[in-house]
Amino acid sequence: MDENETFLTGEFLRQLFHILTGVFFIFFIYLSGDNAALIFMVLFVVVLFFSIIVKRLEDPQKLPRLFRKFGRAKKQRIKFQGTILLISGVLVTLILFPRDIVYASVAIVTFGDSIATIVGTSIGRHKLPYSDKKSLEGTFSGLIVAFLVAMLFVTPFQALIGSLGGMLMESAISLKTVKRANIISVIRFFINDNFLIPVFSSALMFYAGL
Image (tube, rainbow, N blue to C red):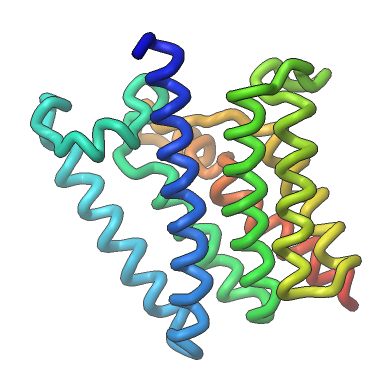
């Protein structure tokens, strides 16, 4: 398997894990009821603590093979960065918005982001005019899938508005990570689609439903 095939396989596995995580979150929120926000706060602390522990293993070969395959060592210095940001985004939506909008926003970031990445990485040929890393094929595919899944929870108009906003956010933002422990680095850390898509799409869907 050459380097490109290895990259595509790893990316596919990461996005499959991303989808499964989002589906799990939706069911978990439903089963948690009124305690969902509190439980996600605890989950955030647990994953952050686990990230710190894993980071202390300086030799990446000491990590389980599964973690090495899912990770993006050249792009991420914080372990499980995507999961931490996704939990943070879901937590904010749980605090600010009604439950049906939370479900829809998780569906948008889960399916829209993942499908856009898979399609864009595998068959994307036409780059967006404002991003040399994202493709028209990926963004359009993610938009369609996000819209269809979001309609399971909100009205078609809300799903369309939320999906458009979410995928615009996905196409415009590149992965960033913390390099230094200062306020600017923390702000850059949260300028990430896993965090911003659920929050931004939730706000759009909420006001679209007024």
